[in-house]
Every structure is written in C-alpha cells, then in structure tokens.
Amino acid sequence: MIYTAKIIAFFICLATIALSSCTKPMEDTPGNKPQLFIPTAFTPNNDGLNDNFVIKASPDLTYYHIRIFDNSNIQLYESTVYGDAGWDGNANGQAEPVGSYLWVIDFQAAGTAKFSQNGYVQLIR
Image (cartoon, rainbow, N blue to C red; front, side, top):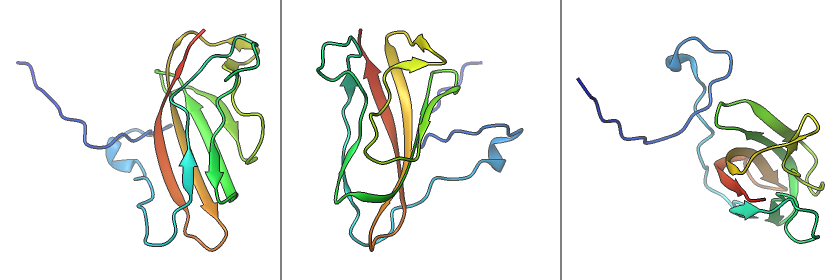
C-alpha cells in the first residue's frame, strides 16, 4: 500500500529515537521581529561575488546561532558570531557538492523576543 504525506512542518531531530521526542521550533511571538535578509543561493567560486552564505539583519542581532545541514541531516557549519564571513560551502576542509542545504537560525535583537527560522540555500559552483 502507498501512502501520501503532506509535510506541514520540518523538524530536525538529532540523536532521538522517536519523533515524539523532538523539540518543536520556537513560535513567533508578538513584538518587533528583526527583518532577516537571507540569500536563496550562493556561488563559492572565489570570484568575490556571493562566495559565502551570509545572513544580514535589521536591526543588528544581539543573539545569533546558525546551523547548516546537508540532505542527510549532518551538520556542516555552525556559528554564533553575527556578522562573521558566513559559510564558504566547505565542511571539514572539503568543498561540498552542488545542491540544497538546510539552514536553521535562532536570533534576537535588542528588546525583542527570540525567534527561530529555517529554510534552504542552493549551493551553485
């Protein structure tokens, strides 16, 4: 028998046995949510244009935690430094292949609640 599933939300469960033990992402709370500027693709080919996946925000963030995962849910990149150079498309010193990569970011600006957001970025070589 074939079943069809509609994905309503995407959760990452690391080192869990049952999906019921996953933690749900933070819900958006009322307040002034910082505006994120998130590219949908980048080209790490050392031409000086879009070589790194960098998230910008307005206003600047006081809390920032980003993680990037491959399609096997293996974490390839992590940073807690807002304004750093971003992900260069490499993991463990090796260039990652062309494809889509999941990013997950937890963030906060001064005077706001903490928020969580996720999406995909396309790596193009």
